[in-house]
Length: 355
Image 1 (tube, rainbow, N blue to C red):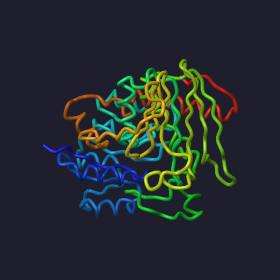
Image 2 (tube, rainbow, N blue to C red):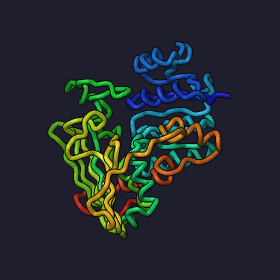
Image 3 (tube, one colour):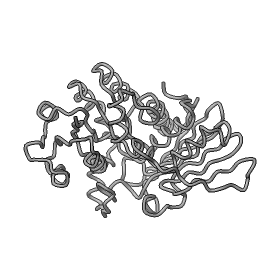
């Protein structure tokens, strides 16, 4: 039997990407869409052949009528906990698009709701499915650079309003920026909340689940905006310092032309380094045996490790909890670092890791 999937809330433009992945999966049937603003569903409904009577504005009605096995959730960050609690009460599994939540407290609400309902929850971080970053993780696990000491992360894009579903190019107006939830503090906007979780969650994956001791962060708030477009976070681990930078306003988007600074990760170990940049066909491995370095072709990702839908369907089929960056446990540590960075930037001082 096919796994039934519904898409709920179109706040985040990644909904289009995830619905396309679901539509192309041979074991998935798209059974419904739901959004408080009906117009936001129309393009997806047309593209994926969703009938009018399977489009909803009420979450409960959608779940009761379509009876999905799992839902794709893409609400504004500050509403993640609200939506997870509502969906979990129907005993439906959850694939939540990044970031995890607007705070550790809300992440804990999400974890508690899923556990109480006995459903599986995964947090999708799209960088998890980038071949270069998966190759870096493999090389790290193979011990090619010894013990990891530092993670250096820089990532972002021109801004969240410059592209829609499937990375369709858009030129936003000033009014669109002012009106978008991405630029509203109360709704979890800002480059830090949008992108820092990528670095801290995959960084936690690279660090083997270890958490830092303390965090220092600074943010840039351009005139007229209530959220940041650039942030720098330094996390002190027992092994040393790791650095995470987020940027709305890169010169180019990394999926079209890699900007400078380059978006991605540099991992420093006791015996070498790995340079892994977003969507790169190769990673650079530098070791004591070969300090000049060598280029390693990025691994070819195969099902079920090509995208979040493949992976979550496989988890459900095998009754296996999500691992790595998609697991609530790893994502929670990433959220702790994010919360600590927000607090540090506000207080303008170093803070202990938020519990």
